[in-house]
Amino acid sequence: DACDAGTYADTEGSASCTSCGAGSYASSEGSTACTDCPAGYHSSSTGASSCAACDSGYYSGSGEASCTKCSGGEYSGVNATTCQLCPVGRTSPTGASECDACDAGTYADTEGSASCTSCSAGTFLNATGQAACNECPPGRAQSSTGQSACSECEAGKYSRGGNTECSQCSAGHFQSMKGQTNCSSCAAGRIASSTGSSSCTICDTGTFAAAGSASCSKCDSGRWSNETNGAQNCSLAPKGTYTRVGASEPVPCDIGYYTDTVGASEQMPCSALDSLLTTLEKGSTTCDACLSGHFIEYDDEGLYHL
Image (cartoon, rainbow, N blue to C red; front, side, top):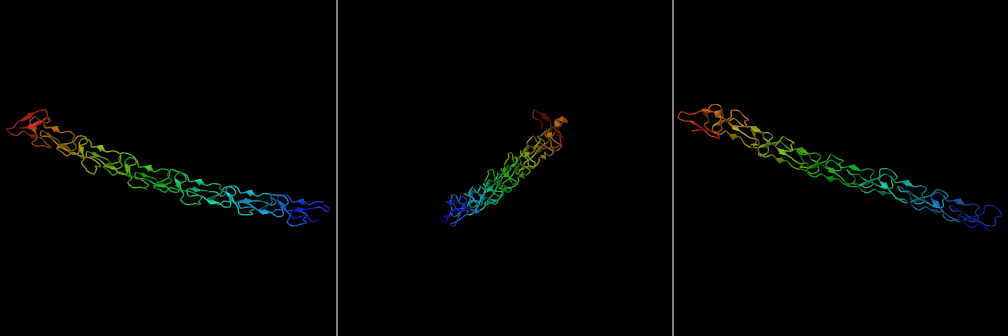
């Protein structure tokens, strides 16, 4: 009798037929040999009359009893003889029939990646299926990994790009707007005493500040300022006046006192020049002789013209 499909007899006078081994088949009766399953197909049992195609996500070479699962980062269709690498921007688990695009905030920069990598802090990615992340643009920052956007810097802060945090404006500087790349110096007569300032403070009268200052300085003795919008420097006290430290206006000399130079820090007594000299009014720059019929009386406070 002829051997059934799936069996064979390879010698004359055989008493029985032999089943085809796993990975091979005989499709017709009376076969004298079995044929290996072609690549992409398999037969898992003996006595097969045909081979089954490998499912998607699997592959095989010729004569295989089973199909092999594609590794992570690979994929295949049905009856595949090999698995293909996932392209950049896409990944797969084992046994995949296709590759999945990396989510926003993640990437795959090489072919055959089994998983996506999160964008590092200071970078972002707002599209799927990408091979690289983008640096945060100037004026923005991102402190977390795997993000699809960067956060705008607040007022009082700035960034130059690719930053994990926005930097605070240094003392003496400010930034009034969001999303900026630098800070501005406080104008003369104004200060920012702390870091991260969004505005500058006007110096009080009697003080001054150069541009970019963190604090106001008191006017030296002999100088004064009364700028309501902040002074860059202090003015010299004019003749006939004097000032002490931190003065907002010059003080006229008392009767019996004078100053004959600008920038005086003390009023000078006329008596130091001559006991018969005085002044006739406040704010004098010189001393005068006592008028006929008058005399000068001294006390602890100064000189009086009587």
